Picture 1 (cartoon, rainbow, N blue to C red):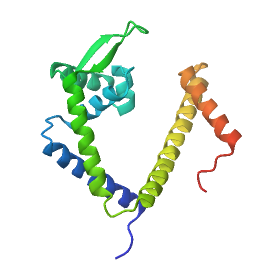
Picture 2 (cartoon, rainbow, N blue to C red):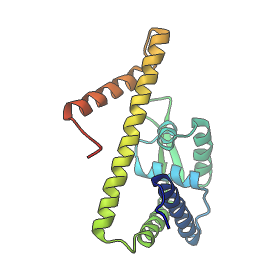
Picture 3 (cartoon, rainbow, N blue to C red):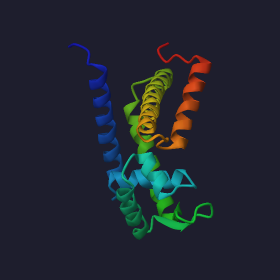
Amino acid sequence: MPSLSLSETLHRLMHAYKTQLLSDIASQEIGLPITHIRALKGVCRNPESTAQSIALRMQRDKAQITRVLNELQQGGLITKIDNPKDGRSQLLRPTAEGEKIMTQISTSELKTVAHMTQALSSAEVETFIKLANRISKSVDEAAAVKSGADCHAQESLSGKPKNTNDKEAVETHLMAVNATGENHNE
């Protein structure tokens, strides 16, 4: 049988991971949709999380994430408090029940990873993590370059930067990459 292409391999791996994780989550009797789980994870992992930061992290529309967060709040899994640094937003915090659910989710994730890596040695897992991180970093850098190009195009059309902070971040990142001579093809 011929070997699969990288894209097919990655697709099969993502599908296998999602299927196994959903099965392990179901066995914990966690009755939350995956979007709610991802949002709860974001809240639990970042004490400075806001609806905007969760939407950015999940790459979803803020209105959709706001609805999810409201449902998590109504379900008693998160609370909202005034943000002392920005009166226009609220900080999100998990409740005791939210923390309990997060513990169950973490247990499910560990079980899934153990199941999926049982045939691999520790060195193979470590190598896979390094390679996957390099691939992800490459994708992130390409997105940053595209974002910088989009900012430059917007600046050319309007005479002013679309978002100065984004443009500066991209320029700083690109200068750092060029200065260190990083080569991701090694």
